[in-house]
Amino acid sequence: MVRNRTTITFYGGVDEIGGNKVLLKDRDTRVFFDFGMSFALKKLFYSPPFLSPKSGKSLREFGILPKLDGIYRFDDTEPQVDAVFISHGHLDHSAYLSFIKREIPVYCGETTSTVLKAQSEIRRPDLEFDLEGLDFITFRTGKKIHVGSLEVEPIHVDHSVPGAYGFVIHTSNGSIAYTGDFRHHGAKREMTADFVLKAQESNPVATITEATNMTGASVSSEAEVEKKLNDIVTQTHGIVLAEFAYADVDRFNSFYRVAKRNHRCLAISMKQAHLLNALRADKGLSLPNVNDKDIMIFRKSKSTRYKWEEKVENQCPGQVKTAFDLSKQQNKVVLAMSFFDLEELVELQPQPGSCYVLSASEPFNEEMEIDYSRLVNWLQHYGLPQYHVHVSGHMMPLELKAMLRKIDAKAVFPVHTENTELFVKFMKDIRGKIIYTERAKEYNV
Ligand SMILES: [Zn+2]
Ligand SMILES: [Zn+2]
Image (cartoon, rainbow, N blue to C red; front, side, top):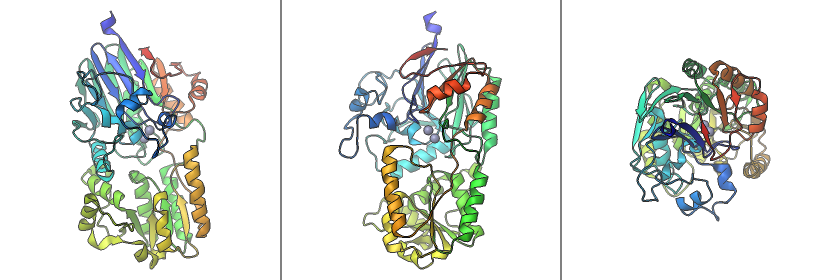
């Protein structure tokens, strides 16, 4: 009897945005879905760079890594997990693969593997993000993967990074749908609809759903973002400075099209150029070539050059521009720059009539607020008005409810949210049982 049990345990993503680590046990099979970094949990004990974890053991000590044996490189026990499935390449779902025993296979989408590999070339390997030696097995949507007693069906979803998947997992006790991170207002909403349909058809006993946006939700779309960006760029006489996530290719496409329409070039960072080069082979993404005449590559002034940066420079020699180069053609450029590039403004000297577009989420925690107040000081110093134009990578509450109704699972587990209680109350009138998800508790399905 006991051998036929199917259970789910949440080791991260509970009462926090990200850090998902879901252990599914079915008969003798044990599989993790996502193995992300828990920013919130880590912050309870650490304050980098002066108080940083020294080893995986420290992270396990505080439950930032699950307190389990047979998973980590730093313990000598036999592997006790059969596989890890990664829904997408964001670090809050994937970074802690760093600690996984190298003999445990890691399944992820083809594009996710490209994103992760490009990211690990860009970041120098550190304790919390080192993918060296992992055995990636890639899939595309519609594939069926057998691991022990489980059959796992990855189905594409729309999210703010390419190659995001949800999973329909067929267990000995019925199917479980796991959304990963998803939305229904992005450039490829039909992919999310595909997932919802597959989940519904599987007649699931449980849905594990992200519930990020229970507060501060909005009604918008990537198409609307593009339109607003166009309005701003059309009216700007100087340089347009823009902050957006470098792995968000939909946002990149929006900026690229808007720049082009306004006879400007889009100047992207070296790391975005590196990622785009890596993703070029993916025909499903329809990305422009980095060598395109409407793209420039912004080189920050610094003394060290990494190998991947040299590769980018050699591939696109005529397109690499410095702050000094761009300062001479401000009304011809939309410059993608992050908070960490602000120092470049000293060389760039934005001319009057320039502006700054924050095309990323607003600060949602204390540390980000501190950084944000510095950003405000920089913008004030250079006389740059700030516009906020963004749409979330996550599902909005009313749409989420409609989808959960459609999927109609017997039980619903919210993860990836700081508002579990609100979610439970808001979803109460759907047919399935809404579970108040708790950390490290084993649930029977
Ligand atoms: Zn996430
Ligand atoms: Zn994500």
